[in-house]
Image (tube, rainbow, N blue to C red; front, side):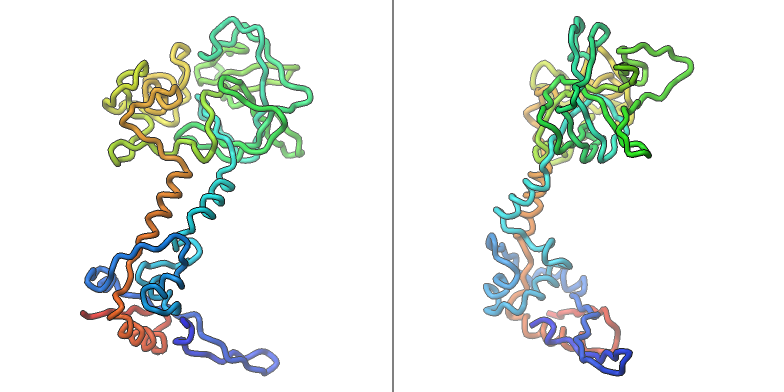
Length: 357
């Protein structure tokens, strides 16, 4: 076994008793020169579900050389660096990414633990998909049954991930506001607007900062429209074009068809809260209008673009781990000898060994 090669040390307790322990505070690894020598290693594809011990047995007819596999691949944590069995890993990922992603048009300073509550609108004569609310009558539920807890905020792709909540559900084009716990432990409506003394703000009218505020029962709320909904595991994390990662702010030539890609917007900026009522989703030529993110939310993403999600990225990364470098069996005995010599030397606790072939 791995620790059979390690020296022991004598640990002395305060009462005078001693105990012989394996000196595990030592480390031996291959030099970079050895790892770069492809003639020493084979590429081996791990069988799904086979741990390092099983793989060691398949390669070297013994399960005790899993440490050679770890050293050959610079793996430090066998629980995270070794490829995971597909079915159990997929189950784990489905549990990890258990929320819902809600895409919005703004960049509010959302925090984990914030609560999104549904704001009901009625008697609207404007185009609420364009966020024109001047004639709307707003209210919130009593009791509140449609709410979610903010898990995280993805500013780059402008969606919040929310979990839990009440019996109600959110839909595309619904409006919501944010409640946040104050220092007294009470949940209060959050006003994300930064007041400008030179601006006259009107209730239900979008200000120059891109935010729309409303007042219900004397309480001021900043409201947001849900532009798109994804399961968290299927939310956009990367846009890919012919194997290369594309900026979500790259321009699409047309949003009425699948479109084609053109140059990046020179003014694309993830920190702009600008607004343009005639182009409602991610809006303004200085911001998101006509970009890949805009096209994705509208459902007209160019066919040349593929979307990578948290689930896909994790599964792809795990798939890469199945291809490992395996020390060729004829070099195993020599490696064990060098390892044992180094681990028992007095030249230090962290050493490297080099195979000269």
